[in-house]
Length: 68
Image (cartoon, rainbow, N blue to C red; front, side, top):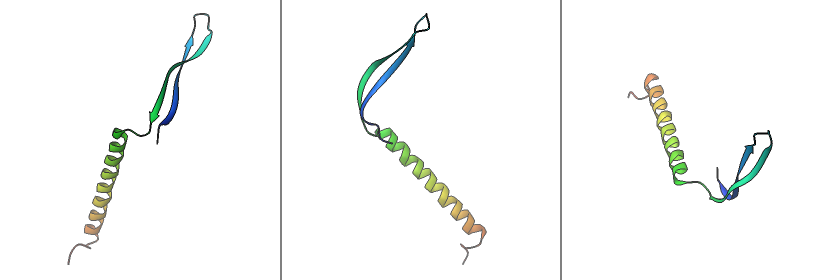
């Protein structure tokens, strides 16, 4: 998921009389994915790969495919 482009943070406030107002609180530019997002994605892929390899090894061992 990329977060690139111009963005506005809108703030809604409610007055004592119940009136609502919406205003732009901050304008900012997003530059895409951060390093932490990419690192988290790589960590998830690594863990999933290890789990799949573990299940494959256990299945092969139980079906006696590893014995000569």
